Image (cartoon, rainbow, N blue to C red):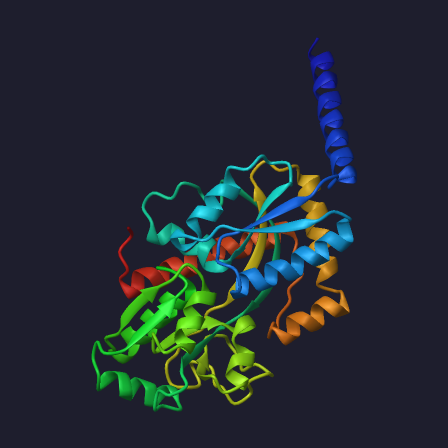
Length: 324
Protein backbone atom coordinates (compact mmCIF):
# COMPACT_ATOMS: atom_id res chain seq x y z
CA UNK A 1 0.00 0.00 0.00
CA UNK A 2 2.80 2.39 1.00
CA UNK A 3 4.66 1.65 -2.24
CA UNK A 4 1.48 2.33 -4.19
CA UNK A 5 1.06 5.72 -2.54
CA UNK A 6 4.67 6.60 -3.31
CA UNK A 7 4.18 5.59 -6.91
CA UNK A 8 1.01 7.66 -7.12
CA UNK A 9 2.76 10.68 -5.61
CA UNK A 10 5.66 10.33 -8.05
CA UNK A 11 3.22 10.10 -10.95
CA UNK A 12 1.41 13.24 -9.74
CA UNK A 13 4.69 15.19 -9.49
CA UNK A 14 5.70 14.04 -12.95
CA UNK A 15 2.33 15.09 -14.32
CA UNK A 16 2.63 18.51 -12.68
CA UNK A 17 6.13 18.96 -14.09
CA UNK A 18 4.94 17.96 -17.54
CA UNK A 19 2.00 20.38 -17.31
CA UNK A 20 4.35 23.18 -16.23
CA UNK A 21 6.68 22.59 -19.16
CA UNK A 22 3.74 22.40 -21.55
CA UNK A 23 2.48 25.73 -20.20
CA UNK A 24 5.94 27.26 -20.69
CA UNK A 25 6.16 25.91 -24.25
CA UNK A 26 2.93 27.66 -25.18
CA UNK A 27 3.66 30.81 -23.15
CA UNK A 28 2.81 33.48 -24.01
CA UNK A 29 -0.26 32.95 -26.18
CA UNK A 30 -1.73 36.41 -25.54
CA UNK A 31 -0.44 39.92 -24.69
CA UNK A 32 1.56 40.39 -21.47
CA UNK A 33 1.31 43.48 -19.25
CA UNK A 34 4.32 45.01 -17.51
CA UNK A 35 3.19 47.06 -14.51
CA UNK A 36 5.63 49.97 -14.06
CA UNK A 37 5.17 51.70 -10.67
CA UNK A 38 6.42 55.09 -11.91
CA UNK A 39 5.20 57.89 -14.15
CA UNK A 40 5.95 57.88 -17.91
CA UNK A 41 9.15 59.44 -19.28
CA UNK A 42 11.45 58.57 -16.36
CA UNK A 43 14.30 56.08 -16.35
CA UNK A 44 12.22 53.10 -15.22
CA UNK A 45 9.62 53.76 -17.92
CA UNK A 46 12.28 54.23 -20.62
CA UNK A 47 14.03 50.94 -19.84
CA UNK A 48 10.72 49.10 -19.38
CA UNK A 49 9.62 50.06 -22.89
CA UNK A 50 12.96 49.01 -24.38
CA UNK A 51 12.78 45.59 -22.69
CA UNK A 52 9.07 45.22 -23.48
CA UNK A 53 9.79 45.71 -27.16
CA UNK A 54 12.64 43.18 -27.08
CA UNK A 55 10.53 40.60 -25.25
CA UNK A 56 7.68 41.09 -27.69
CA UNK A 57 9.97 40.33 -30.62
CA UNK A 58 11.46 37.26 -28.95
CA UNK A 59 8.26 35.77 -27.53
CA UNK A 60 5.98 36.80 -30.43
CA UNK A 61 3.36 38.57 -28.30
CA UNK A 62 2.90 42.25 -27.35
CA UNK A 63 4.38 43.29 -23.98
CA UNK A 64 2.35 46.32 -22.89
CA UNK A 65 3.64 48.90 -20.36
CA UNK A 66 1.05 49.93 -17.76
CA UNK A 67 2.27 52.92 -15.69
CA UNK A 68 0.88 52.90 -12.14
CA UNK A 69 2.78 55.60 -10.20
CA UNK A 70 2.20 56.58 -6.61
CA UNK A 71 3.25 56.07 -2.99
CA UNK A 72 6.92 55.47 -3.80
CA UNK A 73 6.12 52.55 -6.07
CA UNK A 74 3.77 50.87 -3.61
CA UNK A 75 0.57 51.22 -5.66
CA UNK A 76 1.90 49.55 -8.80
CA UNK A 77 3.88 46.95 -6.87
CA UNK A 78 0.81 45.92 -4.88
CA UNK A 79 -1.22 45.63 -8.09
CA UNK A 80 1.38 43.30 -9.58
CA UNK A 81 1.67 41.26 -6.37
CA UNK A 82 -2.07 40.50 -6.46
CA UNK A 83 -2.11 39.50 -10.13
CA UNK A 84 -2.94 35.96 -11.21
CA UNK A 85 0.38 34.04 -11.17
CA UNK A 86 0.26 32.96 -14.80
CA UNK A 87 2.94 35.21 -16.31
CA UNK A 88 0.55 37.63 -18.00
CA UNK A 89 0.85 40.52 -15.53
CA UNK A 90 4.42 41.20 -14.41
CA UNK A 91 6.24 43.92 -12.49
CA UNK A 92 9.00 46.00 -14.05
CA UNK A 93 10.50 48.06 -11.27
CA UNK A 94 13.53 49.86 -9.84
CA UNK A 95 15.72 48.79 -6.94
CA UNK A 96 14.53 51.14 -4.20
CA UNK A 97 10.87 50.19 -4.61
CA UNK A 98 11.75 46.60 -3.73
CA UNK A 99 14.63 46.87 -1.28
CA UNK A 100 14.12 50.18 0.56
CA UNK A 101 10.37 50.26 1.14
CA UNK A 102 10.46 47.40 3.68
CA UNK A 103 12.63 49.62 5.91
CA UNK A 104 10.47 52.72 5.42
CA UNK A 105 6.95 51.42 5.87
CA UNK A 106 5.70 49.45 8.85
CA UNK A 107 2.75 47.95 6.97
CA UNK A 108 3.40 47.31 3.30
CA UNK A 109 0.45 45.62 1.56
CA UNK A 110 2.90 43.07 0.11
CA UNK A 111 6.17 41.36 1.01
CA UNK A 112 8.88 41.89 -1.64
CA UNK A 113 10.35 38.44 -0.98
CA UNK A 114 7.28 36.34 -0.19
CA UNK A 115 4.94 37.79 -2.83
CA UNK A 116 7.24 37.86 -5.87
CA UNK A 117 9.25 35.46 -8.00
CA UNK A 118 12.36 37.31 -9.28
CA UNK A 119 12.77 36.87 -13.03
CA UNK A 120 15.73 38.93 -14.25
CA UNK A 121 17.90 41.88 -13.32
CA UNK A 122 18.32 44.59 -15.96
CA UNK A 123 21.43 46.73 -15.60
CA UNK A 124 23.29 48.14 -12.65
CA UNK A 125 24.78 51.57 -12.00
CA UNK A 126 24.66 54.81 -10.02
CA UNK A 127 22.66 58.04 -10.08
CA UNK A 128 23.84 61.53 -11.01
CA UNK A 129 23.89 64.44 -8.58
CA UNK A 130 22.42 67.27 -10.67
CA UNK A 131 21.89 70.97 -10.03
CA UNK A 132 20.06 73.59 -12.06
CA UNK A 133 22.29 75.18 -14.67
CA UNK A 134 22.23 78.69 -13.14
CA UNK A 135 23.27 77.56 -9.66
CA UNK A 136 26.71 79.19 -9.18
CA UNK A 137 28.62 75.99 -8.39
CA UNK A 138 30.76 73.70 -10.53
CA UNK A 139 31.89 70.98 -8.12
CA UNK A 140 30.43 69.00 -5.26
CA UNK A 141 32.57 70.86 -2.71
CA UNK A 142 31.35 74.19 -4.09
CA UNK A 143 27.77 72.95 -3.84
CA UNK A 144 28.29 71.91 -0.22
CA UNK A 145 29.79 75.33 0.63
CA UNK A 146 26.95 77.14 -1.18
CA UNK A 147 24.27 75.10 0.60
CA UNK A 148 25.96 75.46 3.99
CA UNK A 149 25.92 79.23 3.60
CA UNK A 150 22.16 79.07 2.91
CA UNK A 151 20.65 76.67 5.44
CA UNK A 152 17.13 75.59 4.50
CA UNK A 153 17.14 77.85 1.42
CA UNK A 154 17.77 75.15 -1.19
CA UNK A 155 15.43 72.34 -2.23
CA UNK A 156 15.98 69.00 -3.89
CA UNK A 157 13.57 66.58 -5.53
CA UNK A 158 13.43 62.81 -5.76
CA UNK A 159 11.09 60.19 -7.19
CA UNK A 160 9.54 59.58 -3.77
CA UNK A 161 10.17 59.28 -0.03
CA UNK A 162 12.70 56.53 0.51
CA UNK A 163 13.74 56.41 -3.15
CA UNK A 164 17.39 55.99 -4.05
CA UNK A 165 17.61 59.70 -4.87
CA UNK A 166 16.13 60.63 -1.51
CA UNK A 167 18.48 58.39 0.47
CA UNK A 168 21.56 59.46 -1.49
CA UNK A 169 20.88 63.15 -0.81
CA UNK A 170 20.07 62.49 2.84
CA UNK A 171 23.41 60.68 3.15
CA UNK A 172 25.20 63.68 1.64
CA UNK A 173 23.29 66.06 3.93
CA UNK A 174 24.34 64.06 6.96
CA UNK A 175 27.99 63.86 5.92
CA UNK A 176 28.23 67.56 5.03
CA UNK A 177 25.89 69.00 7.66
CA UNK A 178 23.43 70.48 5.16
CA UNK A 179 19.85 71.62 5.70
CA UNK A 180 17.74 71.33 2.53
CA UNK A 181 14.07 70.80 1.75
CA UNK A 182 13.02 67.52 0.15
CA UNK A 183 10.31 67.63 -2.54
CA UNK A 184 9.09 64.10 -3.42
CA UNK A 185 7.50 63.35 -6.81
CA UNK A 186 5.71 60.33 -8.27
CA UNK A 187 8.54 59.64 -10.70
CA UNK A 188 11.97 60.82 -11.82
CA UNK A 189 10.57 62.41 -15.00
CA UNK A 190 8.51 65.11 -13.20
CA UNK A 191 11.39 65.68 -10.77
CA UNK A 192 13.86 66.33 -13.60
CA UNK A 193 11.37 68.57 -15.41
CA UNK A 194 11.01 70.81 -12.36
CA UNK A 195 14.77 70.84 -11.92
CA UNK A 196 15.07 72.01 -15.52
CA UNK A 197 12.43 74.64 -14.84
CA UNK A 198 14.20 75.93 -11.74
CA UNK A 199 11.43 75.01 -9.31
CA UNK A 200 13.97 72.95 -7.33
CA UNK A 201 17.73 73.32 -7.02
CA UNK A 202 19.19 69.81 -7.05
CA UNK A 203 18.47 66.10 -7.34
CA UNK A 204 19.99 62.69 -7.59
CA UNK A 205 18.48 61.27 -10.80
CA UNK A 206 18.94 58.23 -13.00
CA UNK A 207 21.56 58.46 -15.70
CA UNK A 208 19.43 56.93 -18.43
CA UNK A 209 17.19 59.97 -18.80
CA UNK A 210 19.59 62.78 -17.84
CA UNK A 211 23.02 62.34 -19.42
CA UNK A 212 22.01 63.96 -22.71
CA UNK A 213 20.41 66.83 -20.78
CA UNK A 214 23.73 67.36 -18.99
CA UNK A 215 25.71 67.15 -22.24
CA UNK A 216 23.40 69.76 -23.75
CA UNK A 217 24.25 72.12 -20.87
CA UNK A 218 20.72 72.27 -19.48
CA UNK A 219 21.74 70.82 -16.10
CA UNK A 220 25.07 70.45 -14.30
CA UNK A 221 26.29 67.08 -13.02
CA UNK A 222 28.51 67.28 -9.95
CA UNK A 223 29.04 63.59 -9.12
CA UNK A 224 27.63 60.10 -9.56
CA UNK A 225 26.79 57.59 -6.85
CA UNK A 226 28.21 54.57 -8.65
CA UNK A 227 31.61 52.98 -8.05
CA UNK A 228 33.25 54.43 -11.17
CA UNK A 229 33.00 57.26 -13.71
CA UNK A 230 30.88 56.73 -16.80
CA UNK A 231 32.22 56.98 -20.37
CA UNK A 232 29.56 59.49 -21.48
CA UNK A 233 30.54 61.95 -18.71
CA UNK A 234 34.19 61.13 -17.99
CA UNK A 235 34.83 64.41 -16.18
CA UNK A 236 32.11 63.81 -13.59
CA UNK A 237 33.69 62.21 -10.49
CA UNK A 238 32.18 59.63 -8.20
CA UNK A 239 30.87 60.81 -4.85
CA UNK A 240 33.88 59.18 -3.19
CA UNK A 241 36.34 60.88 -5.54
CA UNK A 242 34.63 64.20 -4.83
CA UNK A 243 35.31 63.83 -1.11
CA UNK A 244 32.01 62.42 0.18
CA UNK A 245 32.23 58.60 0.32
CA UNK A 246 29.00 57.06 -0.89
CA UNK A 247 28.47 54.20 -3.32
CA UNK A 248 25.16 52.62 -4.24
CA UNK A 249 24.02 50.49 -7.12
CA UNK A 250 20.69 51.10 -8.76
CA UNK A 251 19.14 48.42 -10.95
CA UNK A 252 15.94 47.62 -12.77
CA UNK A 253 14.25 44.27 -12.59
CA UNK A 254 11.47 42.06 -13.89
CA UNK A 255 9.45 40.10 -11.33
CA UNK A 256 6.39 37.85 -11.46
CA UNK A 257 3.78 37.20 -8.78
CA UNK A 258 4.73 34.41 -6.39
CA UNK A 259 3.62 30.93 -7.49
CA UNK A 260 4.10 31.75 -11.17
CA UNK A 261 5.13 28.41 -12.74
CA UNK A 262 8.93 28.08 -12.54
CA UNK A 263 9.08 27.08 -16.21
CA UNK A 264 7.40 30.37 -17.18
CA UNK A 265 9.85 32.31 -14.97
CA UNK A 266 12.74 30.51 -16.70
CA UNK A 267 11.35 31.26 -20.14
CA UNK A 268 11.07 34.95 -19.28
CA UNK A 269 14.57 34.99 -17.77
CA UNK A 270 16.02 33.42 -20.91
CA UNK A 271 14.20 35.95 -23.08
CA UNK A 272 15.50 38.91 -21.03
CA UNK A 273 19.06 37.58 -21.08
CA UNK A 274 18.77 37.02 -24.83
CA UNK A 275 17.75 40.67 -25.17
CA UNK A 276 20.79 41.71 -23.13
CA UNK A 277 22.97 40.04 -25.78
CA UNK A 278 21.22 41.68 -28.72
CA UNK A 279 23.62 44.28 -30.21
CA UNK A 280 20.77 46.72 -30.88
CA UNK A 281 19.47 46.51 -27.30
CA UNK A 282 22.98 46.65 -25.85
CA UNK A 283 23.81 49.73 -27.93
CA UNK A 284 20.65 51.47 -26.74
CA UNK A 285 21.42 50.58 -23.13
CA UNK A 286 24.95 51.92 -23.60
CA UNK A 287 23.46 55.15 -24.91
CA UNK A 288 21.41 55.23 -21.72
CA UNK A 289 24.68 54.78 -19.78
CA UNK A 290 24.32 51.22 -18.62
CA UNK A 291 27.95 50.23 -18.20
CA UNK A 292 27.14 47.01 -16.35
CA UNK A 293 24.68 44.49 -17.82
CA UNK A 294 24.66 41.37 -15.63
CA UNK A 295 22.88 38.35 -17.08
CA UNK A 296 21.64 36.59 -13.97
CA UNK A 297 19.53 33.58 -13.22
CA UNK A 298 16.33 34.09 -11.19
CA UNK A 299 18.16 32.69 -8.16
CA UNK A 300 21.04 35.14 -8.55
CA UNK A 301 18.62 38.04 -8.89
CA UNK A 302 16.80 36.88 -5.74
CA UNK A 303 20.13 36.88 -3.87
CA UNK A 304 20.83 40.43 -5.09
CA UNK A 305 17.43 41.61 -3.81
CA UNK A 306 17.97 40.10 -0.38
CA UNK A 307 21.51 41.50 -0.07
CA UNK A 308 20.36 44.98 -1.14
CA UNK A 309 17.49 44.87 1.36
CA UNK A 310 20.06 44.39 4.12
CA UNK A 311 22.43 47.09 2.78
CA UNK A 312 19.77 49.72 2.12
CA UNK A 313 18.08 48.92 5.42
CA UNK A 314 21.34 49.70 7.19
CA UNK A 315 21.55 53.02 5.29
CA UNK A 316 17.98 53.96 6.28
CA UNK A 317 18.87 53.27 9.91
CA UNK A 318 22.15 55.21 9.67
CA UNK A 319 20.42 58.26 8.20
CA UNK A 320 17.76 58.06 10.88
CA UNK A 321 14.67 57.86 8.68
CA UNK A 322 11.67 56.72 10.69
CA UNK A 323 9.33 54.07 9.25
CA UNK A 324 5.93 55.48 8.36
